[in-house]
Length: 287
Length: 278
Image: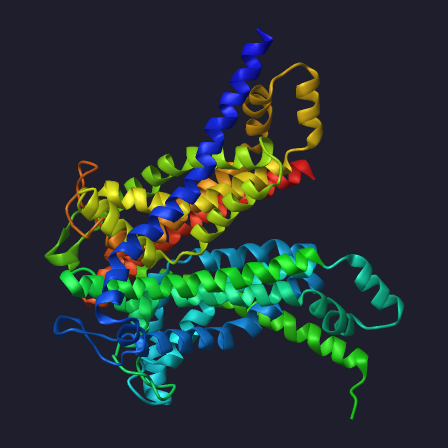
């Protein structure tokens, strides 16, 4: 009787282990299928002609996505410039200053901001931010600037919640020691808490970048989708993600393969960012 | 010149507070705009009638049905896998290289952008498995996408269950599995439910992964192999193709408020669970 129960537990353990392996399996098949569709073109046309190619005319044999790579990085950087200081301020306020009551409504508000669909952000960007830039700053309005503002708002919740966690993990003794030496709250936050949490904060910026570079629908709506490297903040641009989403519905043959190649490049960038973020978080835990 | 530290301290406190309030103001502004612009066009007829002329006239009933299908069916697929994984990671193993690899898989899945899920679902479910643009393709794609959310929240919820409950259960002669199913899961249920609701919210708000797997048919889906259009996709098409601003705002209103209600309920449930155990 007892023996049967023990065996049943072993069986349960095996089944649960299979369940746990499913995530790895999914990750594996996602990679296999994106790569199997996307890599052949790299062999056929050459890595340089795709990753560093300037011209995108997939129906005529030009598969250059370099302008999109640059554009993706530009708006990702722009999103950080817009979002990161605000997000860090929110995280610092939440962890160091906010009382219990403020926390109870501030934290869920930030999480609700994360729940708003990206199409809604894109739509509000088109209706309010794009015309504002066109009328007061210049250019067509669809621009690096409009995209950076929209993405900057969208990365707020990601950066805030991860920096908040890393600020909270700074031991209370650090703060107490600083107060005991007569430092003010701000001196403590600026000189003790923020430096102690810096690797977690850095990781939050990188994960925010991952969110921004992967964002699609909002970017399509506000970026203008022009096929060249933008040279000013008011120039329209096309990112890697919007390139895929704009053309996938009707692409066939090599054109479709080229969109998967775009996906491969995007996937590589995302994996590098995730590994970097992981590395920084690990280092913090290791210390 | 050095400013007096007390003054700097006061100024920075006010500055940080202002920035935090500004962020809340962004959320409130978004909700207000959608509400004010969408509410005049929100009628019972809009919710319960079919769209006509590409959505220029009529309502969004098929999209609501499509959204419900996608949200509920995707968690039907993802929940057992997610809870199973969480139980394995917390109760059936120690931290080892094996669990680290699994966690790496979960984290990587969480970091993959939705357009990559769209590409994958399109080539794998729609084309290779010949499911076509269908609720099934969309549901399976979104199920994989929300799996990390369910795993993480379930793990947190299971970890939050006090150790003493396990000890007591074992001391009464219960096996591991009995302890998990009769003691741990019931106690962790609210936290797990939170993860499930957040996942539904994510499925409802998703566009990029859904549009290339579920398609954008305006007809009412009657089987799992039918194409359909979720509210998010419908809203995207209305707005992007400039079909109708009024209908776009009204759709956005239904979409955003459904998501808000789902998320607020989810946080409320989690908040109550945390209050119980701490």
